[in-house]
Amino acid sequence: MGITDRQMVRIERAFTDCLCRECLTNVVAGEEGSVSDPSSPT
Image 1 (spheres, helix red, strand yellow):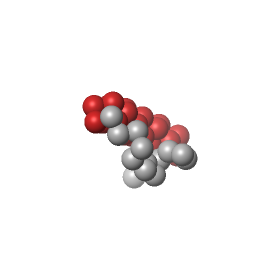
Image 2: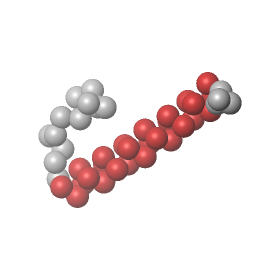
Image 3: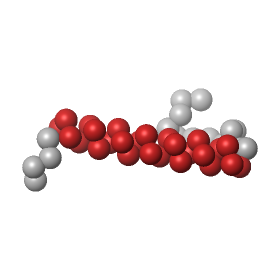
């Protein structure tokens, strides 16, 4: 398949960014900042 490493990084970054935004939206909506999130260090 013709996907380069650089394209893969971009896709991953966009995907994570989307997930982060959705996570933030959910946190703000549910006021649940103490939920353990595997993607965040603390």
